[in-house]
Length: 500
Ligand code: NAD
Image (cartoon, rainbow, N blue to C red; front, side, top):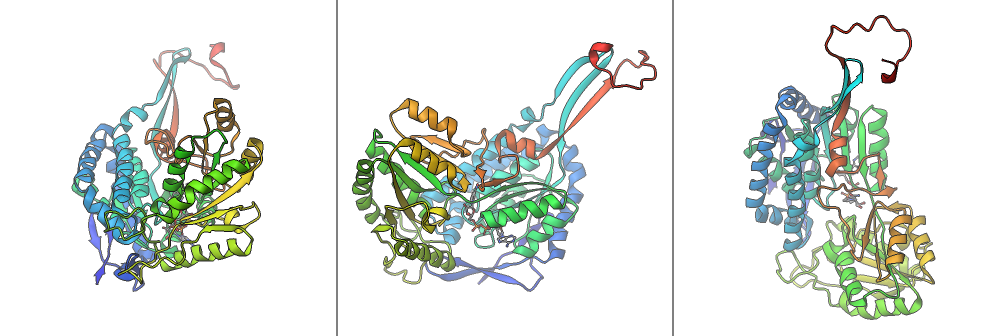
């Protein structure tokens, strides 16, 4: 069996902690490799490598730094299929979806190639007699990234290309459940000419994370994962003086208005609720039907589509939905379906009995569809992170909006309607960070920024795009008097420019 490795100072480094975790092929339930869990000392080595690389890298002109990213982008394109296969083998998502994930990550790399434009500062001439003021953005230092299992390639690419383009160095701690894609991507960065030590990777669990959160050499931490862990990361990192952005869990509602195009609604729901087996932070997990007739129509059209979903291993080119990532996640999802039944929701499609011939030990479950879900049920309040869609019926638009706004999460949402007034009102009043109008998964493109509200994000800045540049840089403002021949004389009170 393969044993995976860390990547520190441009080299593969075998784990020495003696602690390992199993990485599974979720389609077969077999262990495919062993992942070493880094000790605090091993994480310390990665931080030391990043710290050592920082002075030269941060002093490299931005235009030269991004030359490596242009080559990195080309290597990612050339290796897209290979990376997609690594993702599918450990995560389980179907190959087309894994390729799509690489593409969305690539777009952030392409954005990072243009960062010199965004690192430009501001300049005000003559703020006082002979005095100019300018602001510049400088790297924050050594940054860390802690990433989730569900986008093992894309989420690391949201972080380190942006961070290093801004002149920082980086330590990545990918999910221990499926780290191979991230390892490959970091190796490709080296091949592209990113100097040794600029991007390092350690595999690990809480020990590694806690070291990153407390080591004084780390200046900033980007986290993407569940809300419970994200809250901890934000509190611990902030207490230790770090800049922290923690993007967390979700329960994304799609409001279906009575005038919506129901064919479009059905297509949108089947893809956004069941694609990647619902293991997406932007998956739709609640459909809010406005009016009983709308609810009946959603169920009538959607139920046969859910029953007909082609579930299979990623290697099956016809599969639309793969297995769940681990046995534990599968039992958590099954547990929620049972809770929904106990709590009185109407299970219209029950995917629990699905048996995948030839893959009986794989972590498969079919799509599940609940109707008449109410807001006090755990299947409504909690993030299930599986292929389970809840339909909630409400009487009018205001109730639909209220439901979305009262939910603890505020990552993504969508409204489906032909009514421009309703859509505009929704966009304006909804308490959610990313909003779709007749678009079910409104993931912002790389030149905007990604982030939720409420319990879906701790920290001030969203990830990638212009917010990403703000997160990975700190502003310095300089006030300079030239020529020095102008004498200001001694001053004992604050002066404004107007006084000079
Ligand atoms: P997770 O929180 O279990 O793990 C995320 C990272 O934190 C991993 O690297 C893991 O090793 C580490 N970690 C786990 N437990 C820890 C602990 N107790 N202390 C310190 N570190 C710990 O999340 P996951 O299951 O890998 O990913 C799924 C979650 O991520 C879902 O909640 C999903 O909504 C969320 N997610 C959010 C976004 C977003 O942008 N908002 C994107 C993708 C995924």
